[in-house]
Amino acid sequence: MPEKWSAQQKLFPHQVGFTCPPFDYDAEPSDFLRMSPETVGVHGWMLHVPDYAHGLDQRKANFGMMDDFVHCMARNSVVVCGLVGSN
Figure 1: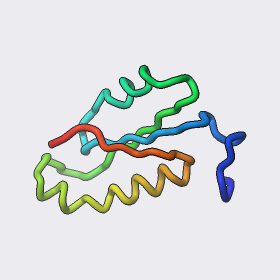
Figure 2: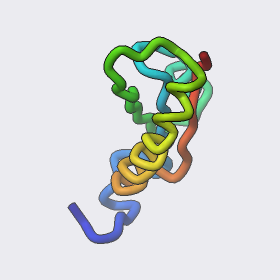
Figure 3: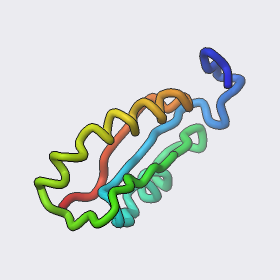
Figure 4: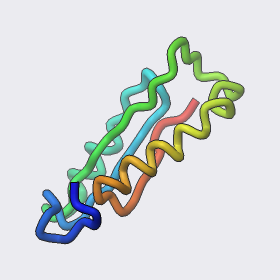
């Protein structure tokens, strides 16, 4: 992995990352990709929390996973991250 990404190393010049609550599939990343120019790539990362039941207490307890998500996406040259879906 390069220390710093350059445009020549990226699969797409512009990359966006999406995540959603555990056990949910959300089509918004696909919808986003259909509206985007061909120079935009989309990556996804579904959060994994065993026995997740969509409780706000669980969302609060696992909010730190968002930091992990953004860190992983940034290391892979994603410049914009978004959370889709809701409880």
